[in-house]
Amino acid sequence: MRNLSVTRTDGILIFSVLFIMMAGLFTMSSFQMYDTYFLKQGLWIIVSLVALVVASRFEYRFLKETRVVVALYGLALGVLTLLFILGKVSKGAQSWFSFGGFSFQPSDIMKLVLVIVLAKYFSRRHVEIANIRHVIVSALYTLIPFVLILLQPDLGSALVLGAIWLGMVLISGISKKHLFAVIAIAVISFSLAWTFVFKPYQKARLMNFIYPLQDIRGSGYNAYQSTIAVGSGGLFGKGVGYGTQSRLNFLPEYKTDFIFAAYAEEWGFVGAVLLFLFFGVILYMLGTYAFLGNSTFESLFTYGVLIWFFTHITINVGMNIGIMPVTGIPLPFMSYGGSHLLAESIALGMCIAMYKYARSGHKYQMKNEFLGLE
Image (cartoon, one colour):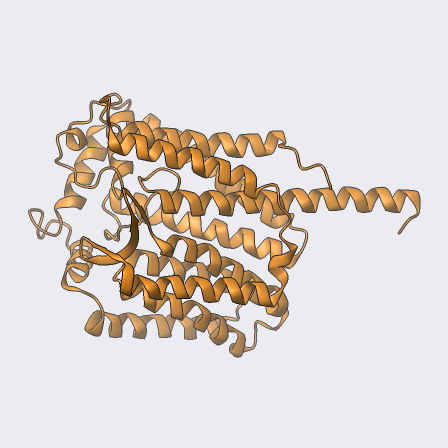
């Protein structure tokens, strides 16, 4: 077995993740002895870090086998379907399985599975991506979980699946005419969804994005309070534990959807820049890993994870500062919740493992060539 010990590069990446996790943990803490959110999130952080390290120790050649990918995809779809029977309804959405005091959201794992499916599909057909058939087939792979998640209803997670598909199609080399066709289909699909699928509160959120001050006491309240929290942080913030908008409950959901606003209020502009720096390190390292991938599959998988994380960061921060609609998407490694933390950590661990095996493989190849064995 090759030596896959943690390198300095991996250490920088893991430290960046740990900083973001800790920043989220202390932002949501009430600093009381029996803080349920703090204890649960702390436990999930430990589990997720262990999962990250364990995932970084395996080789993932088996994911290139069609039967394995089909089995993962079928299992993920089965779990999503099972939600409509056994899922817990919370805030109007049937998106979670509840086990005692813990809840699990299958859509987070579906994002990882979709990245695997699309990486497998495009790694075999990226040279033929000019054929519209491959664009359509890959879209169908995405459409099935997209519809299942949209029916929960969970618009935010469904949009992330769409973004993953679009990003991976673009990376695979879609032609311009097919790209315009995809955009046209997206516009038509959105129009149909607006008419037949979107709930009134989802329409209200989107309308509030266009007219942010139209209903600040109703559908626009969360977004309005979020922008106040971000702006009130100033240069250096109010101090950890002293954010008035979040601690006095003016800002709802500050542990999940609006954790960036709560963080910015307490850490200020300097703290926000520091947070973006660590997110930037993660995205940069993923881009590097993808560029140096050992095969097309590894590169596409890592690019898919990068797109997944980037979409979450962009939408979550955007809705926190009032430039994007509120869609209920968590901030990676920071928002409260175990299922997204676990899925993100496993995905990141897999990217590290693929990069390390690629690098190790290059070393072995160079050594064999030097010795005249190849």
